[in-house]
Length: 436
Image 1 (tube, rainbow, N blue to C red):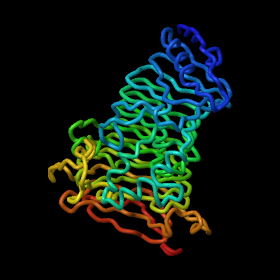
Image 2: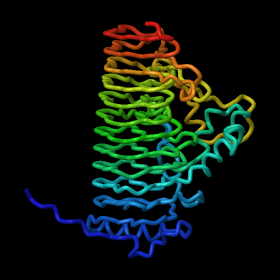
Image 3: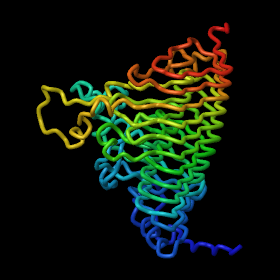
Image 4: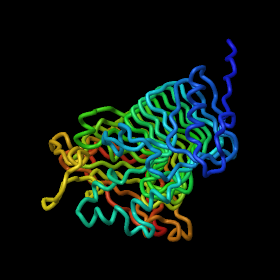
């Protein structure tokens, strides 16, 4: 076998990148990246704290965060250029992330260092220091709850878009302003060994896989305030226009310590298919395996295999909600609204044909699931009570061929199941208040 030549090394220290956490280091680090791109080199970020705005990795390079290295995202919004992007299922202009890989191939982002988005600055912008104010309260008061997530722009820690053959390995992602890692319109992505914590703000998802093909996520430990790993494919009229499927995704051997669990949706318009989710542990998350959509999303969710899930103190071990969060999902500019209507509002509120809007869910297998409650579960549950099943679809288009096999759940209540055709049970036990 031919020996691969060692990569030429480009240490950002040689470019004079300050590591005091205060002096901007974006220009020096970007210069190292640009030089490394000429020969497929390896950019080394030594221990220290580097205050940065958006960095853009290039094809053929490895960007390596050594132990003790910290990229500290700027809180100056001007340091994140506004670029064409997709956010929560809609194509729009949005700030770039802290680390970006856009339109590239054969790129590796590696090491045991940390990307720190300085989240509290961005979280307070969204919901105020007391979680009762900020843009969220302003928009709710104006009847615009559905718009705030798009208008309150916040950088992602890592954005990978329109790329092929990408490796994300080993680093820590903390305090992200928005989603931690967003993969969009990509092929052949491997995410392995990432650790995420201190992500207590709104929409601090762990890994979002958005209209991608051939993705492997493994051995990640994720603590966040929203979806731990989420598989997406576009929202409503814009998602139906783009019509890009998310398929051939494997998520395995991960631990979820806070957040909303393992999620398909709510952006389902382009379709989600051929998904395997296996050997996942959940401890204190709000949900376990979750599907969510809405009557304006459309798309087909099919060929989903879920196995070997272990849950402790999970409020909703199994939740499939196809009429999810109406105040966010259904967009309409109030009749008494005065002022200019932003382009993104027009996109969001574009009507969807009812026949195309209701998603189709079929061929779902969930097997080898154990969900338990500790003796002091009330201290750890995200919600006051747990329920085993929270499943609700549409009578005019029920879910089809849903199988639960070798499932054992202990919960405070059973919950409900509605809108499923061809439901199969094989060795399913639900224990309520100590009684089978």
